Length: 361
Ligand code: KG4
Ligand code: ZN
Image (cartoon, rainbow, N blue to C red; front, side, top):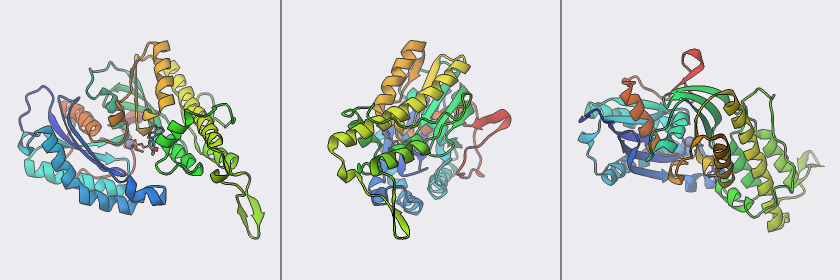
């Protein structure tokens, strides 16, 4: 261990879902390497992540990915100050692969292991390779598994203000893309197509859940899309079947559906975000998660930040999706606060609430 007080050199490991990732970060935000092995090809035919397949693939990939991240960073194991790992929330079998690898490495090197929350780490992605941000801040996480709003006193001191009560926004994107025949994961394809469509072609529902609520709901939007594209199911014998599919639509009609969906999804996110910003006096807006790569969301957020004079931290494209640089970065802040874990560190499918409604980073 060579820690000199300027910010540690941390190896991060991420295996919470379907990307096996490792990264080396020093002085909290300087990314020296960022290696990601995606499993999309393995899960595509199922149109979703199969947990058992994901864990096995992590096991095969974890050591080569860690090795590559060290080589790319030009850092040896003996130069590391700590090992960081996503230990929650996520698929339990997948998380356990990363946690076991991180503990074994930290134990053998006699350096600390630091478990971090994957969702809060997404909010750190916009700080990587950038100047530090001012706090307090509002944070919006939009991914395949989560849609949440936070109030942050620092990057490691967060309060959950609202979350989705059903589907995550990325999940709604992926399911809608499947309905439109765009493949998996369809978020990026739907985003691209939406840019050629008429976003007022279809009036789709935007859930409110009460004016004061900061929760989201995207399942109604997804179901409305299903019926709009495929029609009402008709009774045939003992079952109900759809009489239409996306194959019956012209390319322009598909683009119009994509654009209308995108308008409704982004409007739903912006409405709740504005309510949170009205309620809390902050100068910084942190955004992260796979859907933060979305073109319409990025441009509406930029407009909102300009109007409200906010320091908007949108991650670079390479840090929007699951990656280990954000894990190592957030863990570096925990390192500075001496928030280490011990060998009892384990994985959990859920976030970890602490006192006074706060969430452990
Ligand atoms: O953060 P992430 O890599 O994984 C989770 O933690 O869930 O997010 C993946 C999600 C997928 O649902 C994917 O379709 C979505 O992010 N996504 C997008 C775009 N790029 C990725 N959704 C909308 N527009 C995009 N450009
Ligand atoms: Zn994620």
